[in-house]
Image (cartoon, rainbow, N blue to C red; front, side, top):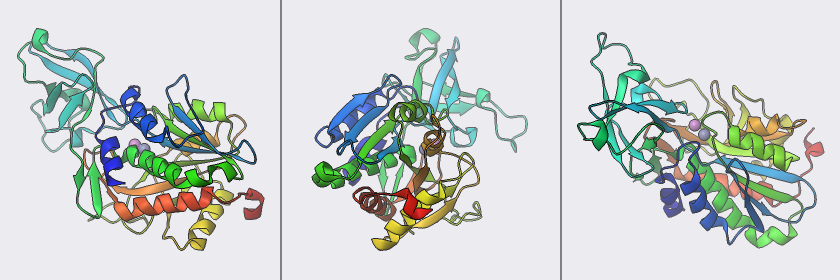
Length: 337
Ligand code: CO
Ligand code: ZN
């Protein structure tokens, strides 16, 4: 699965510009899906299983945070706005790669007070040119952070674990479920969603169109196991996390019980997640149309929204095991009331 992860995380596809990553995922799942489509927002939607029982929507977003050029000055320096949650803390000295292949480094204006974090509009991209006419990018061009995938053995690091790791987990889950697809007691709808980082936009319209009976997002969550880090009961390597709450959603308790039950029955490690700040596509599913029971399987991750997001390979594989166990059994949420 590591080569699939590397392939997906190294693609440059910030929010709103997901065509490259969508095509890469489409090639992976073409032999697995019963039916595939791309909706008007650009979500890739793949169905598996007969149209009976529940319609279960699984969502992982394929966009990533990035930057968009606001203007290039006479000397060729490009100013930018963030796409999604980008902090100047992780920008300075970083490298970026544009959709057209152009690359640059991020510099910062001289700071009067070096103890304060500079504002994003005090940063600029230096593309190695001296004039606007030589600059290979212009207003509206977008870039993602440029870092190669790093395999530390048990721990994997990338600029875009959020949420290409979720996409890799869904692809791998489809592979696992495929032999049973014809006899599934429900229909699975896998959504590789767009524009999550700018406000869950793709999942919002996808969920409206799919109208699921049950929805799960697969996305990263924070960890509380780094030196003097946030206080949170989630660590790397202790299993995927079943979301109980984040700042956008209280998971449906029946869905949480269903997930815990499946993990315990399959003897898989899991953690319970209460995230103070942040949200996922699951909240868009929960609030779509008249509402839907929703939950989220989270991949514990350190340094989210930095160019070096770290996950644990065992957690990733256990997430696939747990999803495969959940999705191949019949589901009746009444049992979990
Ligand atoms: Co994110
Ligand atoms: Zn995410």
